[in-house]
Length: 86
Image: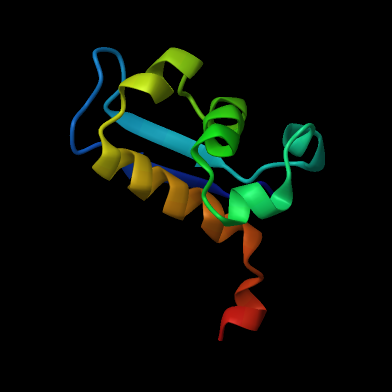
């Protein structure tokens, strides 16, 4: 079952107040470097997030930095094996 995280934006966009991010599949990582994602590279994350959420590329450009950081952190949590984190 695919995990989905729901994040409420601190500064909602015109058409988005809640963002749903689902766990990425291998195909959605196409063209991206895992190292860039893990390092929270803005370009890599701006490519990935529209693939796995209800955000568009334009939405990504208009997010506040606080919301951007929150979304990045939640996305990164999909890349950590919860059994190894304990």
